[in-house]
Image 1 (cartoon, rainbow, N blue to C red):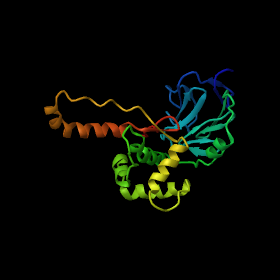
Image 2: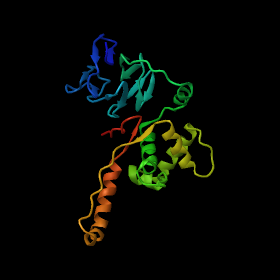
Image 3: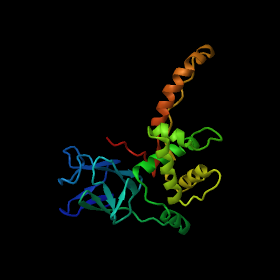
Image 4: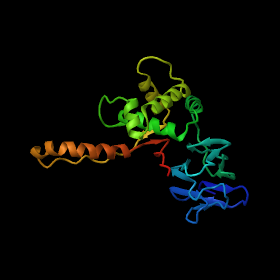
Length: 236
């Protein structure tokens, strides 16, 4: 088969992944329907980007998604990877092999497993640094907390765990060093931002600035960054 596919282990049924997004779940509307009580109605998505396929757990099930036995929020898949949606198992195939340089393979193997909330924190941390503005610095703990609508103390705890996972030693500019490492590993990439409207006149720009600033900041907060290749979908 020339296209990536998912083979359900229990039934042997094969689903070619022709579309850019293929949904997996127990619901009638899922592209790949798994009739298993451990699978949520909309459980996960399989995303195609060129020759690559990655899985995204949508966070709507207590049982989660696993790749080769390890729980994931999202992960790029390789030929033969075993996916578990709840207890339903499937295997990915049809992914072309790729020659990867030794140093790139070494860096990829150093990427730790991350929870969905840790991915959210990394998104918020790196968003300013990946904007079009010059000399932008990573977001502060307070800015991340505001963005994610959580407490600053919770963000600091997540950052401490991320420092440990990425082996960022103590010292000055620790947030910046974490952001640089995340970007270097290709875990966070910018999404296109909405164009900024041009004021019709200089006299009206000052009166509109306060109102437009609040609306644009909230819109920018929704303009996330991709982990791997796509922003983490929000759970219910």
